[in-house]
Each structure stands twice: as C-alpha cells, then as structure tokens.
Image (cartoon, rainbow, N blue to C red; front, top):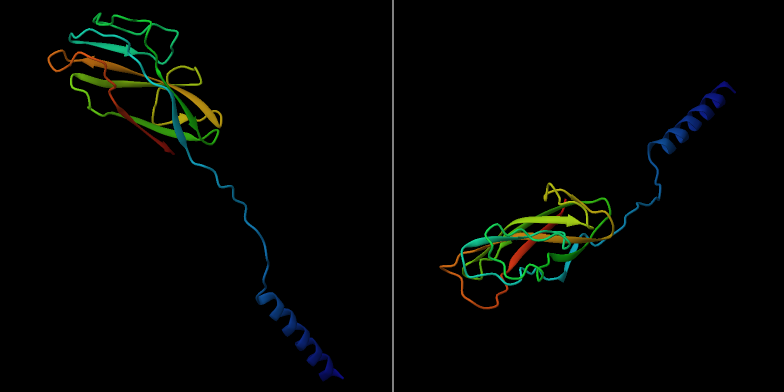
Length: 167
C-alpha cells in the first residue's frame, strides 16, 4: 500500500509539473492606425505690390496686424495676407517644421519664417509645435527681401518648401 501511495504521489507531481512547464494563451494587442500628418494650403501668402528698390517687407502671421515695412517699399499694405494652411495630425503630437526659399525668382528672397497655430501667438520653436486639434489652422508669415539689381518688374510667385515631420 505504501508503494502505491508513493507511486500515486509521483504520478500526480509529474503531471502537475508537466502542466506548469508550458502552455498556450491566445490574446490580443491594441493598435490604431492613423494618418501621420498632412499640410494643405488654403490661402497663398501675398505681399501685395512692392517697389523695385532694395528693401525688406515682413508679412506677419496675424492678418489683422499691419505688415512690417522698414524700408517703405510697399505700395499696397492692404493687399497682403499670411499663408494659411490646414495641418492635420494627432492632437497633442509634437510637429517639427522648417522652411526653405526655393530661390526661383531673381531678386526676391524669402526668410525669417513665423508660424501661429489657430490664431495664437507665433511659435517660439518651429521644431516643437504642438498639434492642438485634429485639424489646426497654421498662419505662416515671412520676410521678403527685394534686391533691385536682380528683381524684374512684373507679377511673381516665389516658391518655398515647407517640411513638416511628426516627432
């Protein structure tokens, strides 16, 4: 009888140990696939009419505030507007933004970019813009430098490239 008890105990321990050594558990993982980021222009940046003289002109991000013209080269300070874009991304995400003048119009150079989000103050750091809503409105301003020696009289559309990266 004693041998039978020992044998039964050994069989029970062996079966329990075998069950503890490995098992399968089917489970799930959560994921939401989202569109990372898009930027679409709704209004073209416009500096209005400027004289063919050396000087600079700054379009600010707030269309209600007059543009800055330290050299008095503007003929039409009512015809300007910042570039207006819709940025679509994940609310709360950090967005990295940079600009490059395409240098595609002789005598006209764009620089000193500014961005305001949803009518707020200009962003202090363009490399860490916080996305407020799924669709934010970005107003973009810049400084236009006119180099009279190279500028050609006429209507021009200087290009620029915006690079936006979801951090």
